[in-house]
Image (cartoon, rainbow, N blue to C red; front, side):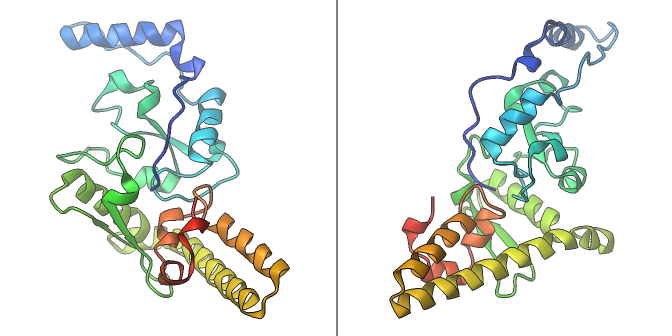
Length: 242
């Protein structure tokens, strides 16, 4: 996960009169459960919501950082699930773009202590990321083991990337395949950049430097895992990272 600055402009589709009425009805239902349970009047999956996701999240799943052409192909996840807080069904700050399989694998019940929110918490520092040589199995750990939100989030990322039983291990294999491809691409880019630099070829060094900066950008696939590569830690200058 990367830290996200969410646009403060709430998509207009989430502020329709029907939705406002639904929220009023939900509040009344919470006070008096003998009232009919309100039915959601509209979808939260509107074009302006998806466009705002593209602006804030760069077309990436907020959990796995898998990147897509745009947010239309992804699910919309509720950070606090709808079954726990139906009043947050249309809350802009509770909506996140999420790859379908990651969304399906994420538990529907929030664990005690909750999860880190990439729009509120420093997920780049509160979770430790490790991609071993060969990128066989991404690893995640809470930087502070007493931070329950970080512990829960690291466990969730491990589940989504590696699975926990035969079926989920197979379902997550494609994600690990994509991470391995990115790992190899970055490794080759580092080698090409260092080679050009050693030869004093300014044009090639500049070109490969730009390639590396793009591959390691926050807008690219799997930013935090790729930045945790040993080769990146050793050879890539910090100024290459946005």
